[in-house]
Length: 85
Image 1: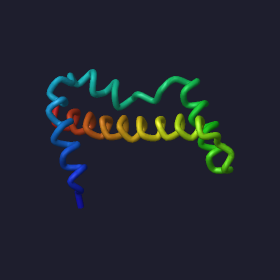
Image 2: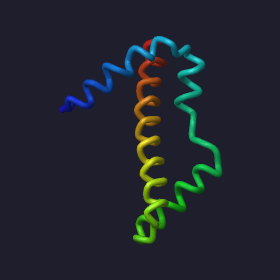
Image 3: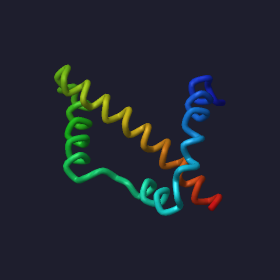
Image 4: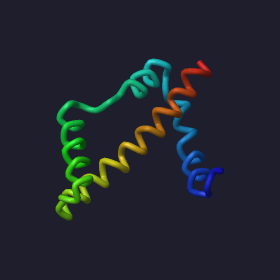
């Protein structure tokens, strides 16, 4: 069941999809971040699981988590663009 936030988010983001070409949508779906970024996120995730993050590291990690959720949402929407193309 979609929440009011989900509905508003989709309503705000969906019009942006018209600007994606199929090639751009494929590139977005394939995006994984660079190796250094993935390594840093993995390090922070491990330290978080162990309960060893400083306040600054926790804020950094939370930023990555939010960014990853946003990117995953865009990737899901890009996949829909590709199915409709």
